[in-house]
Image 1 (cartoon, rainbow, N blue to C red):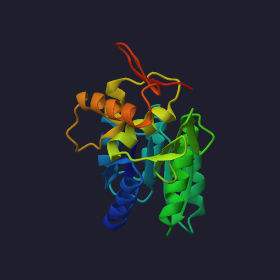
Image 2: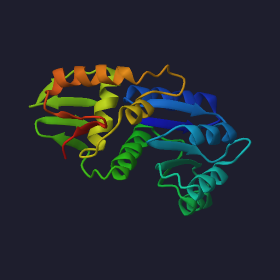
Image 3: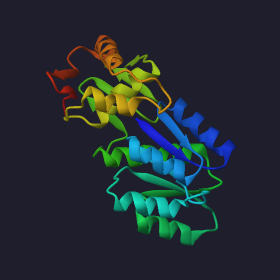
Image 4: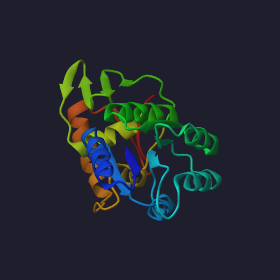
Length: 218
C-alpha cells in the first residue's frame, strides 16, 4: 500500500515517513502544495496524509482541487489542535478524517488503516482468506495460526491483494502501489514476489488470471 505524506515541517515529515515505512507502507513525501499536486497528477496513492498549513498551495485548496478532479483516495488531514474551523472546512471539502497536532503516531496509523479498509470495502481489521490472516495493525501474517515471515515488498504485495480480494489486480497496478516514487520500479519483480508468496502462504491462495493479473478469492 502506498501513502503520500504532505507536510512542510521536516522533522515531522521524517517521523511520519519512518513510522509508515516500519508499518509496511511505501511512502512518498512532499513539503509544499505544488509538489504534492504534481505527485497526485502522476502517481496512484492508497491514502494521503495532508497538512493544511502548506507553502505555495495550502492544504484546503489542494484538497478541493483534487476532489473536483475526481481523486478518490482517502485523505487524513493534520490540523492545529485549536483550529476547529479547519477541521470543519477540511471535512466539508472532502477530507475523510483528521488528526490534531500534536498527535501520537499510533493514532495516525490507526486512523489510516481504518480509512484504507473502508476505501477497499473491508470492515474487519484482520483480513482473512481461508487459513491466511493479515493483521495490518501488527504488520503480521499467519497461516493456520503460524507466523509467516515476509520481506517488506512481499508484505506490500500481499496486503494490496488482500485489501482488494475478489478483484483482478494487474502487474502494473501492483507496481504502482508497492514502490515509492524514487524507487527503481520493475514490474517483472512482481512475478518474483508472487512466486515467493505462494511458497510461503500456499500456492492456491493467489490465483493468476492469464493476461490480466492476480486475484485472491473473496
